[in-house]
Image (cartoon, rainbow, N blue to C red; front, top):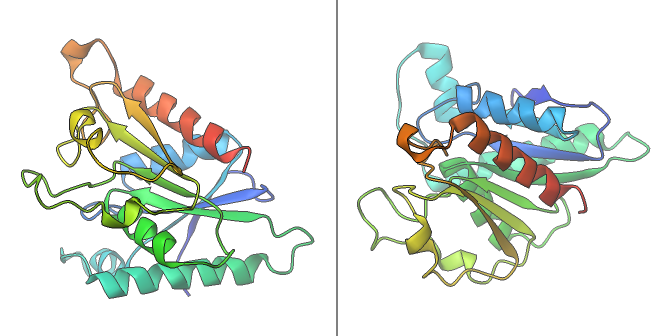
Length: 215
């Protein structure tokens, strides 16, 4: 069994499963703020960790991310676990998948290859369209034909895909974009921009809640 942190109403119609990014755990300030903020907006949020991060928590030693097959298999396992846990409910509700940076990218790869009805939407927070400083190494091929309703929340100056760059990518029409003004990879703006991290994060949470509500 994979350990899960839950936020939000226990009987919500929709549960969003959120995976962490490559370097920060499921209880990082960013992940905690979004889980609690979305929970306050009526969405149940389930956070989990990939094996390398769970081992880091247990040993205190930093480890690199697991290989992609392990990350994707962990996604399959957490979805199956939540589906099984909800099966006894009169209304098991719906699931959406997503996450921060790498976690969201892995969810998007799963969404592109999966034809099941186990999940109904995708939410990516700060999608890593390319490695920082390597705009020629795009991670967008599977996004062109994605059919699952999807939302990408991105900072306008994200070093892994800024607004000008993303405008040139052939993304599926099923993908909606929410831009955080002057936001970096944590959606945080510079002080001189006149925007604040709190405002950007709140607007991003509103965008996610608004996207998920009618599904």
